[in-house]
Image (cartoon, rainbow, N blue to C red; front, side):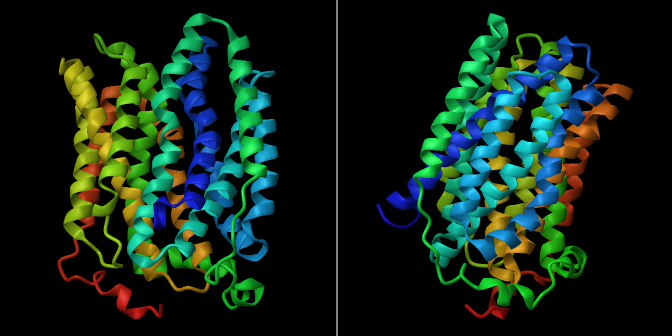
Amino acid sequence: MRGALSWPFLRLYLLSILYFSANSILNVLIPLKGDSLGASNTEIGIIMGAYLFTTMFVRPWAGHIIQQKGPVQVLRAIIVINGLALILYTVTGLEGYFLARMLQGACTAFFSMALQLGIIDALPDKERSQGISLYSLFASIPNIIGPLLAIGIWQSGEMTSFTGVMLTIVILTAVAGFSIRIDHSEASALGPAAVQKQSFFQSFSQLYTNPYLCRCSLLMLVASIVFGAIATFIPLYAAEIPGGSAAVYLTVQAGILVAARFFLRKRIPSDGKWHSGYVMTIMLFVAASSLGVCISGSAGGGVILFYLSACLMGISQALLYPMLTTYLSFVLPQQGRNVLLGLFIATADLGVSLGGAAMGPLADLTSYSVMYLICAVLGVVMAAFSYDRRGKLSGAATTLDH
Protein backbone atom coordinates (compact mmCIF):
# COMPACT_ATOMS: atom_id res chain seq x y z
CA MET A 1 0.00 0.00 0.00
CA ARG A 2 1.20 3.48 -0.83
CA GLY A 3 0.13 7.03 -0.10
CA ALA A 4 -2.56 7.57 2.52
CA LEU A 5 -2.66 3.83 3.32
CA SER A 6 1.10 3.31 3.72
CA TRP A 7 2.48 1.92 6.99
CA PRO A 8 3.75 5.24 8.46
CA PHE A 9 0.27 6.72 8.12
CA LEU A 10 -1.41 3.56 9.40
CA ARG A 11 0.61 3.88 12.64
CA LEU A 12 -0.77 7.38 13.12
CA TYR A 13 -4.31 6.18 12.43
CA LEU A 14 -3.95 3.34 14.97
CA LEU A 15 -2.72 5.80 17.59
CA SER A 16 -5.89 7.81 16.92
CA ILE A 17 -8.03 4.76 17.71
CA LEU A 18 -6.38 4.36 21.10
CA TYR A 19 -6.47 8.05 21.95
CA PHE A 20 -10.17 8.58 21.15
CA SER A 21 -11.44 5.28 22.58
CA ALA A 22 -11.90 6.74 26.07
CA ASN A 23 -14.09 9.57 24.86
CA SER A 24 -16.45 7.20 23.05
CA ILE A 25 -17.18 5.60 26.42
CA LEU A 26 -17.35 8.84 28.39
CA ASN A 27 -19.80 10.43 25.92
CA VAL A 28 -22.41 7.92 27.05
CA LEU A 29 -21.45 7.38 30.69
CA ILE A 30 -21.25 11.03 31.74
CA PRO A 31 -24.86 11.93 30.78
CA LEU A 32 -26.14 8.76 32.43
CA LYS A 33 -24.09 9.35 35.58
CA GLY A 34 -25.14 13.01 35.71
CA ASP A 35 -28.81 12.13 35.32
CA SER A 36 -28.57 9.54 38.11
CA LEU A 37 -27.09 12.21 40.39
CA GLY A 38 -29.96 14.59 39.66
CA ALA A 39 -28.14 16.93 37.28
CA SER A 40 -30.28 18.95 34.85
CA ASN A 41 -29.90 18.87 31.07
CA THR A 42 -28.21 22.26 31.34
CA GLU A 43 -25.61 20.97 33.81
CA ILE A 44 -24.99 17.84 31.75
CA GLY A 45 -24.64 19.95 28.61
CA ILE A 46 -22.09 22.24 30.29
CA ILE A 47 -19.97 19.32 31.49
CA MET A 48 -20.08 17.64 28.09
CA GLY A 49 -19.47 20.90 26.25
CA ALA A 50 -16.41 21.78 28.36
CA TYR A 51 -14.36 19.25 26.36
CA LEU A 52 -14.67 20.83 22.94
CA PHE A 53 -15.17 24.35 24.29
CA THR A 54 -11.64 24.12 25.68
CA THR A 55 -10.38 22.49 22.49
CA MET A 56 -11.82 25.39 20.50
CA PHE A 57 -9.74 27.99 22.37
CA VAL A 58 -6.54 25.96 22.29
CA ARG A 59 -6.55 24.81 18.64
CA PRO A 60 -5.18 27.97 16.93
CA TRP A 61 -2.42 28.19 19.53
CA ALA A 62 -1.73 24.48 19.03
CA GLY A 63 -1.25 25.00 15.29
CA HIS A 64 1.15 27.86 16.01
CA ILE A 65 3.22 25.90 18.56
CA ILE A 66 3.36 22.72 16.46
CA GLN A 67 4.63 24.66 13.46
CA GLN A 68 7.41 26.11 15.62
CA LYS A 69 8.36 23.14 17.82
CA GLY A 70 7.43 20.06 15.81
CA PRO A 71 4.84 17.41 16.72
CA VAL A 72 6.77 14.61 18.46
CA GLN A 73 7.54 16.24 21.82
CA VAL A 74 4.08 17.82 21.87
CA LEU A 75 2.42 14.45 21.31
CA ARG A 76 4.34 12.80 24.13
CA ALA A 77 3.50 15.56 26.60
CA ILE A 78 -0.20 15.58 25.85
CA ILE A 79 -0.46 11.79 26.04
CA VAL A 80 0.77 12.02 29.65
CA ILE A 81 -1.63 14.86 30.52
CA ASN A 82 -4.54 13.08 28.84
CA GLY A 83 -3.74 9.96 30.87
CA LEU A 84 -3.98 11.98 34.09
CA ALA A 85 -7.36 13.33 32.97
CA LEU A 86 -8.70 9.82 32.35
CA ILE A 87 -7.53 8.69 35.78
CA LEU A 88 -9.30 11.70 37.32
CA TYR A 89 -12.65 10.34 36.06
CA THR A 90 -12.18 7.22 38.16
CA VAL A 91 -11.64 9.01 41.50
CA THR A 92 -13.99 12.00 41.44
CA GLY A 93 -17.59 13.18 40.88
CA LEU A 94 -19.31 15.70 38.59
CA GLU A 95 -17.07 18.61 39.64
CA GLY A 96 -13.99 16.57 38.79
CA TYR A 97 -15.58 15.52 35.50
CA PHE A 98 -15.72 19.18 34.47
CA LEU A 99 -11.99 19.64 35.13
CA ALA A 100 -11.14 16.36 33.41
CA ARG A 101 -13.15 17.36 30.34
CA MET A 102 -11.21 20.61 30.11
CA LEU A 103 -7.87 18.79 30.37
CA GLN A 104 -8.98 16.34 27.69
CA GLY A 105 -10.04 19.19 25.46
CA ALA A 106 -6.67 20.90 25.65
CA CYS A 107 -4.86 17.64 24.89
CA THR A 108 -7.13 16.84 21.95
CA ALA A 109 -6.41 20.24 20.38
CA PHE A 110 -2.69 19.48 20.18
CA PHE A 111 -3.11 15.79 19.33
CA SER A 112 -5.47 16.22 16.40
CA MET A 113 -3.74 19.30 15.02
CA ALA A 114 -0.35 17.55 15.02
CA LEU A 115 -1.68 14.53 13.16
CA GLN A 116 -3.83 16.41 10.66
CA LEU A 117 -1.20 19.00 9.77
CA GLY A 118 1.35 16.23 9.33
CA ILE A 119 -0.99 14.38 6.97
CA ILE A 120 -1.77 17.51 4.95
CA ASP A 121 1.91 18.38 4.52
CA ALA A 122 3.11 14.86 3.73
CA LEU A 123 0.56 13.73 1.13
CA PRO A 124 0.33 14.86 -2.52
CA ASP A 125 -2.60 17.13 -3.43
CA LYS A 126 -4.78 14.45 -4.99
CA GLU A 127 -4.57 12.23 -1.86
CA ARG A 128 -4.97 14.99 0.70
CA SER A 129 -8.71 14.47 1.17
CA GLN A 130 -8.16 10.71 1.53
CA GLY A 131 -5.63 11.24 4.32
CA ILE A 132 -7.92 13.58 6.26
CA SER A 133 -10.86 11.22 5.71
CA LEU A 134 -8.89 8.18 6.90
CA TYR A 135 -7.65 10.02 10.00
CA SER A 136 -11.25 10.97 10.80
CA LEU A 137 -12.35 7.41 10.06
CA PHE A 138 -9.92 5.82 12.51
CA ALA A 139 -10.68 8.46 15.13
CA SER A 140 -14.36 7.48 14.77
CA ILE A 141 -13.90 3.70 14.97
CA PRO A 142 -14.06 3.70 18.81
CA ASN A 143 -17.58 5.14 18.55
CA ILE A 144 -18.78 1.81 17.18
CA ILE A 145 -17.84 -0.23 20.26
CA GLY A 146 -17.57 2.50 22.90
CA PRO A 147 -21.30 3.17 23.40
CA LEU A 148 -22.07 -0.54 23.76
CA LEU A 149 -19.23 -0.95 26.25
CA ALA A 150 -20.42 2.11 28.18
CA ILE A 151 -23.98 0.79 28.43
CA GLY A 152 -22.64 -2.57 29.59
CA ILE A 153 -20.54 -0.91 32.31
CA TRP A 154 -23.49 1.21 33.45
CA GLN A 155 -25.99 -1.64 33.56
CA SER A 156 -23.57 -3.84 35.46
CA GLY A 157 -23.28 -1.23 38.20
CA GLU A 158 -19.61 -2.18 38.65
CA MET A 159 -17.57 1.02 38.35
CA THR A 160 -14.40 -0.96 39.04
CA SER A 161 -14.67 -2.20 35.46
CA PHE A 162 -14.80 1.43 34.34
CA THR A 163 -11.54 2.09 36.23
CA GLY A 164 -9.92 -0.94 34.61
CA VAL A 165 -10.94 0.16 31.12
CA MET A 166 -9.61 3.69 31.62
CA LEU A 167 -6.26 2.45 32.97
CA THR A 168 -5.90 0.03 30.06
CA ILE A 169 -6.50 2.84 27.57
CA VAL A 170 -3.97 5.07 29.35
CA ILE A 171 -1.24 2.40 29.23
CA LEU A 172 -1.81 1.35 25.60
CA THR A 173 -1.95 4.95 24.37
CA ALA A 174 1.30 5.77 26.18
CA VAL A 175 3.10 2.75 24.69
CA ALA A 176 1.92 3.58 21.16
CA GLY A 177 2.48 7.32 21.50
CA PHE A 178 6.01 7.18 22.85
CA SER A 179 7.11 4.84 20.05
CA ILE A 180 5.73 7.00 17.24
CA ARG A 181 7.98 8.93 14.86
CA ILE A 182 6.88 11.81 12.63
CA ASP A 183 9.24 13.06 9.93
CA HIS A 184 9.42 16.79 9.30
CA SER A 185 8.40 17.72 5.78
CA GLU A 186 9.40 20.83 3.89
CA ALA A 187 5.90 22.22 4.14
CA SER A 188 5.82 21.94 7.88
CA ALA A 189 9.33 23.14 8.52
CA LEU A 190 8.74 26.82 7.82
CA GLY A 191 10.12 27.79 11.21
CA PRO A 192 9.42 30.74 13.46
CA ALA A 193 10.55 33.35 10.92
CA ALA A 194 7.81 32.37 8.50
CA VAL A 195 5.21 32.29 11.23
CA GLN A 196 6.14 35.76 12.41
CA LYS A 197 5.39 37.31 9.02
CA GLN A 198 1.76 37.26 10.09
CA SER A 199 0.86 38.01 13.67
CA PHE A 200 -0.72 35.12 15.50
CA PHE A 201 -3.51 37.31 16.81
CA GLN A 202 -4.07 39.03 13.46
CA SER A 203 -5.02 35.65 12.06
CA PHE A 204 -8.25 35.72 14.06
CA SER A 205 -9.60 38.60 11.93
CA GLN A 206 -9.57 36.30 8.90
CA LEU A 207 -12.54 34.43 10.32
CA TYR A 208 -14.64 37.21 8.81
CA THR A 209 -12.30 38.89 6.29
CA ASN A 210 -11.33 35.72 4.41
CA PRO A 211 -14.41 34.61 2.43
CA TYR A 212 -13.27 30.98 2.14
CA LEU A 213 -12.56 30.62 5.85
CA CYS A 214 -15.72 32.50 6.81
CA ARG A 215 -18.09 30.34 4.77
CA CYS A 216 -16.50 27.02 5.73
CA SER A 217 -16.36 27.98 9.40
CA LEU A 218 -20.03 28.99 9.54
CA LEU A 219 -21.11 25.78 7.83
CA MET A 220 -19.00 23.68 10.17
CA LEU A 221 -20.25 25.59 13.22
CA VAL A 222 -23.93 25.04 12.51
CA ALA A 223 -23.52 21.40 11.44
CA SER A 224 -21.51 20.71 14.59
CA ILE A 225 -24.25 22.21 16.77
CA VAL A 226 -26.55 19.51 15.39
CA PHE A 227 -23.89 16.81 15.82
CA GLY A 228 -23.34 17.91 19.41
CA ALA A 229 -27.04 17.95 20.25
CA ILE A 230 -27.35 14.39 18.95
CA ALA A 231 -24.30 13.10 20.81
CA THR A 232 -25.17 14.75 24.12
CA PHE A 233 -28.90 14.07 24.47
CA ILE A 234 -29.60 10.88 22.51
CA PRO A 235 -28.63 8.77 25.58
CA LEU A 236 -31.51 10.47 27.44
CA TYR A 237 -33.96 11.03 24.56
CA ALA A 238 -33.88 7.43 23.34
CA ALA A 239 -35.81 6.37 26.43
CA GLU A 240 -38.85 8.29 25.10
CA ILE A 241 -38.95 6.22 21.90
CA PRO A 242 -40.54 2.74 22.17
CA GLY A 243 -37.84 0.23 21.27
CA GLY A 244 -35.22 2.95 20.96
CA SER A 245 -31.70 2.39 22.23
CA ALA A 246 -29.04 5.05 22.54
CA ALA A 247 -26.28 2.46 22.26
CA VAL A 248 -27.71 1.06 19.02
CA TYR A 249 -28.29 4.55 17.59
CA LEU A 250 -24.74 5.70 18.30
CA THR A 251 -23.29 2.41 17.07
CA VAL A 252 -25.24 2.57 13.81
CA GLN A 253 -24.23 6.20 13.35
CA ALA A 254 -20.55 5.41 13.97
CA GLY A 255 -20.65 2.33 11.75
CA ILE A 256 -22.12 4.25 8.82
CA LEU A 257 -19.63 7.06 9.43
CA VAL A 258 -16.68 4.67 9.31
CA ALA A 259 -17.99 2.86 6.23
CA ALA A 260 -18.70 6.11 4.38
CA ARG A 261 -15.29 7.57 5.16
CA PHE A 262 -13.57 4.47 3.84
CA PHE A 263 -15.64 3.62 0.76
CA LEU A 264 -16.41 7.21 -0.25
CA ARG A 265 -13.00 8.71 0.56
CA LYS A 266 -12.05 8.94 -3.13
CA ARG A 267 -15.29 10.80 -3.83
CA ILE A 268 -14.38 13.68 -1.53
CA PRO A 269 -13.15 16.60 -3.68
CA SER A 270 -9.41 17.24 -3.45
CA ASP A 271 -8.96 19.91 -6.14
CA GLY A 272 -9.31 23.20 -4.27
CA LYS A 273 -12.67 23.99 -5.91
CA TRP A 274 -16.00 24.75 -4.23
CA HIS A 275 -18.63 22.10 -5.03
CA SER A 276 -21.97 23.68 -4.09
CA GLY A 277 -24.15 20.67 -4.88
CA TYR A 278 -21.96 18.39 -2.80
CA VAL A 279 -22.08 20.63 0.29
CA MET A 280 -25.82 21.36 -0.09
CA THR A 281 -26.60 17.65 -0.19
CA ILE A 282 -24.64 17.02 2.99
CA MET A 283 -26.39 19.85 4.84
CA LEU A 284 -29.78 18.52 3.73
CA PHE A 285 -28.75 15.13 5.16
CA VAL A 286 -28.02 16.90 8.46
CA ALA A 287 -31.49 18.51 8.38
CA ALA A 288 -33.25 15.25 7.45
CA SER A 289 -31.49 13.37 10.23
CA SER A 290 -32.53 15.90 12.87
CA LEU A 291 -36.09 15.91 11.56
CA GLY A 292 -36.16 12.11 11.72
CA VAL A 293 -35.13 12.16 15.39
CA CYS A 294 -37.77 14.80 16.08
CA ILE A 295 -40.60 12.89 14.39
CA SER A 296 -39.57 9.60 16.01
CA GLY A 297 -40.43 11.02 19.43
CA SER A 298 -43.12 13.64 18.83
CA ALA A 299 -45.31 12.09 16.15
CA GLY A 300 -44.92 8.37 16.70
CA GLY A 301 -42.52 7.97 13.82
CA GLY A 302 -41.15 4.84 15.43
CA VAL A 303 -37.84 3.16 15.87
CA ILE A 304 -37.20 2.58 12.14
CA LEU A 305 -37.20 6.31 11.42
CA PHE A 306 -35.05 6.81 14.52
CA TYR A 307 -32.31 4.51 13.24
CA LEU A 308 -32.63 5.83 9.67
CA SER A 309 -31.74 9.24 11.04
CA ALA A 310 -28.61 7.66 12.55
CA CYS A 311 -27.57 6.53 9.04
CA LEU A 312 -28.06 9.99 7.57
CA MET A 313 -26.18 11.59 10.44
CA GLY A 314 -23.27 9.19 9.97
CA ILE A 315 -23.02 9.98 6.25
CA SER A 316 -23.10 13.74 6.79
CA GLN A 317 -20.47 13.57 9.54
CA ALA A 318 -18.28 11.37 7.34
CA LEU A 319 -18.20 13.72 4.37
CA LEU A 320 -18.54 17.31 5.56
CA TYR A 321 -15.43 17.75 7.73
CA PRO A 322 -12.89 16.13 5.34
CA MET A 323 -14.31 18.09 2.40
CA LEU A 324 -14.13 21.49 4.07
CA THR A 325 -10.72 20.84 5.66
CA THR A 326 -9.23 19.70 2.36
CA TYR A 327 -10.70 22.67 0.51
CA LEU A 328 -9.22 25.12 3.00
CA SER A 329 -5.82 23.42 2.85
CA PHE A 330 -5.69 24.51 -0.80
CA VAL A 331 -7.13 28.02 -0.63
CA LEU A 332 -5.61 29.39 2.59
CA PRO A 333 -2.23 31.18 2.35
CA GLN A 334 0.72 28.93 3.14
CA GLN A 335 2.15 31.31 5.73
CA GLY A 336 -0.09 31.14 8.76
CA ARG A 337 -2.10 28.25 7.31
CA ASN A 338 -1.70 26.12 10.43
CA VAL A 339 -3.24 28.81 12.63
CA LEU A 340 -6.09 29.42 10.18
CA LEU A 341 -6.86 25.71 9.92
CA GLY A 342 -6.81 25.64 13.72
CA LEU A 343 -9.39 28.43 13.74
CA PHE A 344 -11.60 26.49 11.32
CA ILE A 345 -11.40 23.28 13.32
CA ALA A 346 -12.11 25.36 16.44
CA THR A 347 -15.51 26.30 14.97
CA ALA A 348 -16.33 22.60 14.79
CA ASP A 349 -15.38 22.26 18.45
CA LEU A 350 -17.48 25.31 19.35
CA GLY A 351 -20.46 23.88 17.49
CA VAL A 352 -20.36 20.53 19.27
CA SER A 353 -19.93 22.35 22.58
CA LEU A 354 -22.93 24.59 21.87
CA GLY A 355 -24.88 21.49 20.88
CA GLY A 356 -24.77 20.56 24.55
CA ALA A 357 -24.42 23.86 26.37
CA ALA A 358 -26.99 25.86 24.34
CA MET A 359 -29.39 23.12 23.28
CA GLY A 360 -29.60 21.76 26.84
CA PRO A 361 -31.42 24.84 28.19
CA LEU A 362 -33.61 24.84 25.07
CA ALA A 363 -34.60 21.23 25.74
CA ASP A 364 -35.34 22.14 29.38
CA LEU A 365 -37.61 25.01 28.29
CA THR A 366 -39.40 23.09 25.53
CA SER A 367 -38.72 19.42 24.76
CA TYR A 368 -36.20 17.24 22.99
CA SER A 369 -38.44 17.04 19.91
CA VAL A 370 -38.71 20.82 19.57
CA MET A 371 -34.98 21.18 20.04
CA TYR A 372 -34.25 18.67 17.26
CA LEU A 373 -36.81 20.38 15.01
CA ILE A 374 -34.86 23.62 15.40
CA CYS A 375 -31.69 21.71 14.47
CA ALA A 376 -33.41 20.56 11.26
CA VAL A 377 -34.31 24.15 10.37
CA LEU A 378 -30.69 25.20 10.89
CA GLY A 379 -29.58 22.48 8.48
CA VAL A 380 -31.94 23.72 5.74
CA VAL A 381 -30.76 27.31 6.20
CA MET A 382 -27.12 26.23 5.87
CA ALA A 383 -27.90 24.20 2.74
CA ALA A 384 -29.15 27.41 1.11
CA PHE A 385 -26.14 29.34 2.45
CA SER A 386 -23.69 26.91 0.83
CA TYR A 387 -25.03 27.56 -2.67
CA ASP A 388 -22.64 29.66 -4.75
CA ARG A 389 -24.40 30.73 -7.95
CA ARG A 390 -21.58 32.96 -9.23
CA GLY A 391 -18.82 30.42 -8.53
CA LYS A 392 -16.77 32.92 -6.52
CA LEU A 393 -15.28 30.12 -4.44
CA SER A 394 -14.59 27.79 -7.39
CA GLY A 395 -11.34 29.18 -8.71
CA ALA A 396 -9.62 29.76 -5.41
CA ALA A 397 -7.00 27.09 -5.96
CA THR A 398 -5.58 28.95 -8.94
CA THR A 399 -4.49 31.84 -6.74
CA LEU A 400 -2.06 29.72 -4.73
CA ASP A 401 1.55 28.99 -5.40
CA HIS A 402 2.08 25.25 -4.94
